Each structure stands twice: as C-alpha cells, then as structure tokens.
Amino acid sequence: MSLLCSLHSHSHTTTMMSLLQNSPTLHNSSFPQHVTRSSRRDAISFIVKAVQEPSASLTSQDRQRRRQVIAVGTTAPLVFLFNQHSNSFAAENKKGFLPVLDKKDGYSFLYPFGWQEVVIEGQDKVFKDVIEPLENVSVNVIPTGKQDITEFGSPQEVAETLIKKVLAPPNQKTKIVEAKELDVEGKKYYQFEFIAQAPNYTRHALSTVSIGNGKFYTLTTGANERRWVKMKDRLQTVIESFKIFDV
Image (cartoon, rainbow, N blue to C red; front, side, top):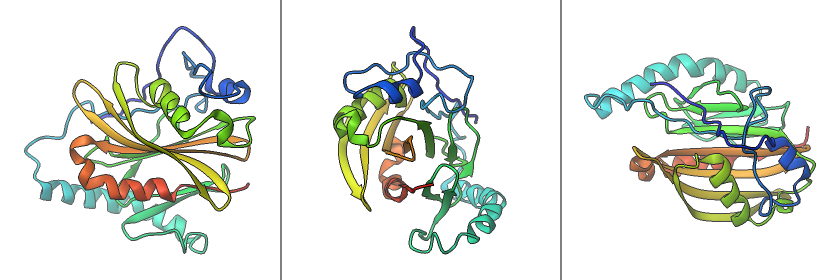
C-alpha cells in the first residue's frame, strides 16, 4: 500500500494563503485552482488513498496482530516524548489514544494507538492506520489575516466550500451530513461531517476548523464507509480532542 496526496490542478493560481488573507467570506470567494509545490503549507488539500486494498486472505486476528507489532515499534518514542508533557495532557489523554502537542503552531489532539505517523507534502501532521490507510488524521496550518472563523461564513458555507474545493477531488460525489459551530473555552470551532464517494470506495469523514495565532487550522479524520460504524466513536474522539492555544 502507498499514500497519495491529492493536489487538485485547475486553471487559476490563487493560493489558499492568499484566499484566507484577502477573502471576505468563503461563501462568495473562489478557492485556489492550482497549488504550487514551493511550500508545504501552500496546500490544504488532503486525500489519502489506498492504491491497493489489503489482501482478503488476512483475517481480523491477523490484522490486529500486525497492528500491535507495528504499533510497538512506532509509538514507543512518542510515548517517551509526550510523557515529558504529562501535566499538559493530564485532562486530555484517553485510554487507547496518544497525544500530539505542537508548541510551535499552537495545537493539540489525540489519535488512536497504533496509527503511524507519515509525511505528506502540504500537511503539518498526518497519522494513519497501518492496515486501513483510509483511517487517518491530518492537520493543516496556514496563515490568515482573519481573527475568527465566523468571518468566513456560516458552518454550512465553510463546509460546502472546503469539501467541494479542497477536501475531496472534483470527480467525487460529496454530501454534508452535518455542520455546526462549537464554543470551547471561548474559542469558536466549526465541525462538519461529510461523505465523499469515489468510483472504488466511499470515505466518511469529520473535519474541524478554527482560527488563532494568525493561522487557519484544519483537522480532518475519516474511514472507509464500510468501517464507519466501527470507527465513528474513535474518530469523534479525535475531532473533539483538537484544541488550539496561544503561542
């Protein structure tokens, strides 16, 4: 299996950074139609795909065994690292999850134990399941001149634009399940749930966006639709754990 980062190619060259700095709202503005490779932060687009599905011969027990073996090797250094910040995460940590704390960009979140960190161009952080690559979480951080997420429009407007222009390729059929605004410790977040249907798979995803420190933050997580019922509670934990803080 391998990963692909989808950077959509269209006719215009407006970057996401320019959009967020200059656009009055997302609803009446165009998203970038082309993303350059000059900076890993120019792109907010992120689609992780499985080039080939795991072998059908693997049983559930085999898959679990592989996850456990890989998880021991890949997460041990992370456990040591985040134990140094145990006070910060005392109230946030949860059984079966590992914490991420980015003091430079000012955000934190939890991801399921066993997911492996990978590097994807244009993304600040990415963790994925080693067996089911559609089960992943990504964080993107780009500069903005806005002070509050509401300056870009309503939750529904922001969700529609991000999903159609950024979070899913144009050839996929998308549907918004829910979009809402939350206030967490005085900070506004938009959360939305959506479905993106490709020819050979359907992804069910959750996203949250917010603004702080002069930056536009996007966290997206999801799973194959066939595993949504099994994964939705864990993915909800991931999305609800995302917090931004002043740096």
